[in-house]
View 1: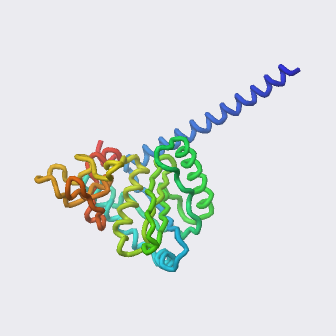
View 2 (view 1 turned 135 degrees about the horizontal axis):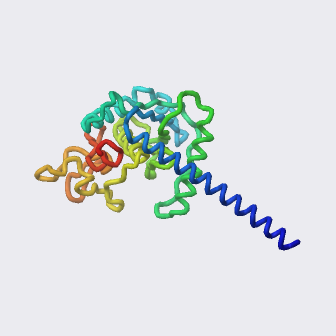
View 3 (view 1 turned 60 degrees about the vertical axis):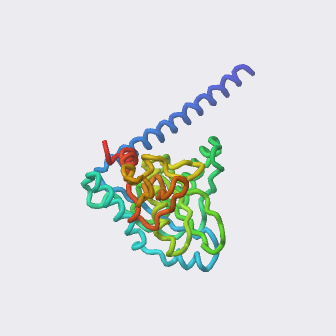
Amino acid sequence: MIFRGNSRRGLVGQLRLLLLLAVLLGVAVQQWRSHVRMTEWRAPLWVAVYPIPAQDTPAVKRYVAGLTQRDLAPLEAFFRREAHRYGIGLETPVYWRLGPVLEESPPEPPAPGRMLATMGWSLHMRYWAWRRLRDVEGPPADVVMFVRYFDPKAEVVLDQSVGLRKGLIGVVNAFATRRQAGANRMIIAHEFLHTLGATDKYDMQTLMPVFPDGYAEPERRPRLPQRRAEIMGGRIPVTPSRAVIPRHLGEVVVGPATAREIGWVR
């Protein structure tokens, strides 16, 4: 009897494992199909942006309440301009839609380098997004971006923003001020491209863009100073040890390496 009981429990455990593996395989296949569809650029992509007041201050609340659809127009214009440079025929390759304000912040990511913790956070993040958005009205989006706004006078150091290819979710930390609106949009565009498979093109220690893929004009002579930033390089190199954040998307381009990663170049 003891042997039969152990055998039964072992069989149940094996069935549970097989079911879990089947679910994970199904999710992986679905994500692969979504990525292939999105990077074929046969139809426009839809991105929903959900602002979140990350601090309970009047400045943050006032700024978030004042956001409108017009604040996302420069993002549409940027991707239209850059996609057309690479021959993408869609009139508007990426549509951006402003969603309602959310009052709860997403789970905080773990420190860099903790692989298992990062995997767990990714799953938690996707579940959190599903729970928060399941009752939100409107058509489903291909990619969801959560933008957390902080008070510029609070003297906080913003954590690194993230974009998840698995889950098609981005979390952006931004300052609630019009002076930073252009830089905020650049970070939103950067993290959105991560969800499509684009990789960082800057040194993780120094934050300096890596030559040549992280440079907007790698063929420029003299090489420095550069005049614009490559979107995944993140900054405009001005000296061998100094680079500045672009003020707006007019100072940013999508380089050839990034264009290949997101399917604009075959």
